[in-house]
Each structure stands twice: as structure tokens, then as C-alpha cells.
Image 1 (cartoon, rainbow, N blue to C red):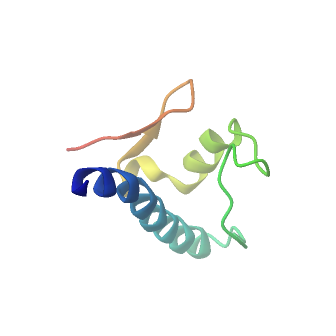
Image 2 (tube, rainbow, N blue to C red; image 1 turned 90 degrees about the horizontal axis):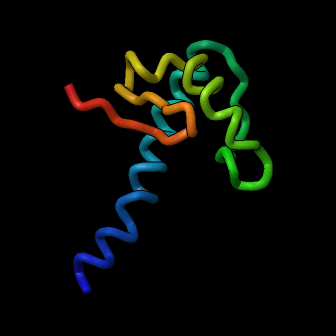
Length: 77
């Protein structure tokens, strides 16, 4: 039961922390991020995710990359 709870809440917490980092970086770059939307949530097509991550340079400041099939990969140094 505890493991189920952890596995359910962990992705959401990670997503929240990732949004915080991206929001701060986009504010520094004056990109005008206005609200939290996610690729494939109905408002933004998944294909835009790669462009967004490249613009924010997430590979260098979050060690986050994306595959051609739009899967996010965390590169652990």
C-alpha cells in the first residue's frame, strides 16, 4: 500500500518541481510563460515539447533530454 502511494505521487511531485525550474528559467529568458500547461493535455500538442525543451536548454541545466518519440530522459551524470 505504501509503495503504491509513493509510485502514484512521485511523478506528480517530480512534474511540479520540473515546472518550477522551467518557470524560473523561462522568466529569466523573458519567454512569457503564463500558466501551467502540459504537452498532450489537450491544449498543447506533444510535438511542441521538444521545441520547448530545446529553447529552455534543459539538457544543460536539468540534464533532461527528449527522444524522437517525445519521451523525456533524465541523464544522470
